[in-house]
Image 1: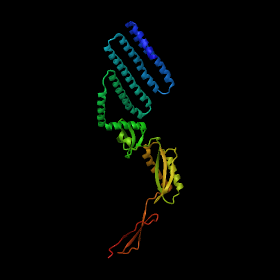
Image 2 (image 1 turned 180 degrees about the horizontal axis):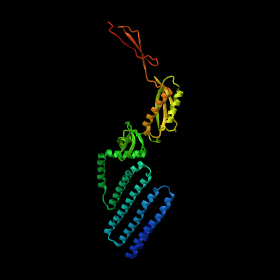
Image 3 (image 1 turned 135 degrees about the vertical axis):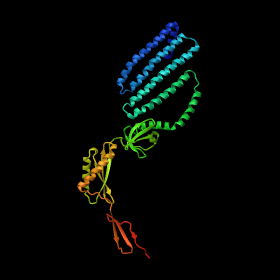
Image 4 (image 1 turned 45 degrees about the horizontal axis):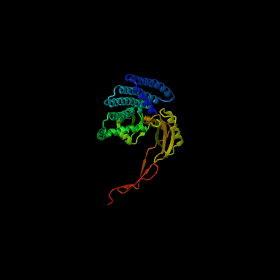
Length: 376
């Protein structure tokens, strides 16, 4: 029905004198473009007001100009058809009009991709660094599709070009395989949300540090020695990474200490709780805990567990807690034992055999040894 209506309208325009038909077509296209522009602006304001977020506004505002420019270009092409009836000029004029329409839409879609990615990652530091990757990929796809369409409009055989592009792609892929691996590694790390700038991470190799920068090719860490370590994203994508800043930045610190056998363990627990409460680097929530871990060879093994605001404070917090525990134990008279050995000499005589009985502080016999002169 719509096709028949368009055919009838075009036949009516052809029945008019050429200058009148040109005025009708060009004037009608300009009027339609103006209506699309004005009506589109009103529709965009109403739609974007009801839909939360700014992504829809970016899409509508990017597509809207391409629509009314397309209307104007189609009207210009139809006007040329009315003025020029030479068959040799019909196909070039049509191809030229379609080329301009394709270029306009490609430019607007490229802007739309950049605007949408910026809106989606406006509050995400890592996302802002990944925006150039998505924009470059989106622009490359649009450029390739537009070039293919333009060549098809002008009746250019693209089969040899596709074959050459395939061979060239293989050569480039082999030459830049590490770069491509790092590119896809950065995309995978971003998609998984493995870490972001400012997080404190521990690598599989044992290196620890804060993430300073995430680029397309690599990730930069600042270690506790204030050194910058650059690690390729392809390596990080296949390695085990411990993110100490996720899901929460608070981290637990363990302070292990041994006390002498016979010590009042309740007194030890109260003393360790008092030490944790006196340190401002220790958080009140979650509450510090004291655990009696077991019976050691020379001491009772006790552990103080407390939380700190950030993993970067682990070294400082451990240092301050160790000092505070040592001082508190000295003040409270709690002994921190150290391994001791008792050696007993039995049945020794001049020139004879001597038996050595070694025992630890808890009385457990150790390996015996003999020492003496010649036995004859």
